[in-house]
Length: 337
Image (cartoon, rainbow, N blue to C red):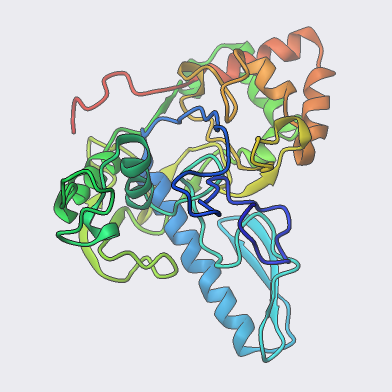
């Protein structure tokens, strides 16, 4: 039995099914997931936090002005609109995000707002290590005879390490071949850039980390700040902020029945394309061995884009793939960490 979700979000199904019968295991056979890399996570987390702050302010504006529809928009990405009738919110026009209006960049299905939130779940699920901040100090919640398996400070160190990793890189336009530059135009022409937004510019160059985390208010309980322009993670400065060229919109999209998981979920966050040349296989479950296969597999909201890709001439097809192969992972990861 899948967890219940608000009626305004009928397509959202929790991909991590809970133990509905309280028998010690989830009612699902398994879930194949292709894990993404952590490079550039600091920039991703900062973009997500700034977008969340914008959306929370717009939500408050709607509540302060009953019966007025307020657009939900941040950094050029639209999340629909919201209104308040004086009693409660109307979420029926909200798009690509849950009702808490928290942007959650981490996890294929947008499950986590920060790397720390992701790590608390991953340490338990994948490693059998229980964070104190989840189960409590001195508690042996899994009955393995060990308490205090992962302390708050240790989890903080992991968080700081991961958000300090180098950002992926792209071959400079001045050094791209004519074919690669032509592929960049094809990328725009068939609508790839509509969801795979090339870059965002943040308001600040500093990523702040909090404990405890309040997802609706990233400015609460800050204990540490990281300058993202340092040699690692190495983001380029733009005004008071940094450029984050992640090629994604941090928004959930329905990818159609062919990509629907065994859990029933078909909503996936737009894949970040930076580093895509070095990170095969592709898609959420790794079913696509090539970039061409990955694009053709798009369905649902992206069906028209997949159709446009399949209809490309051989020259335009090869140019687009050549352009995508200019998006690389760091040359020497952790060298300047």
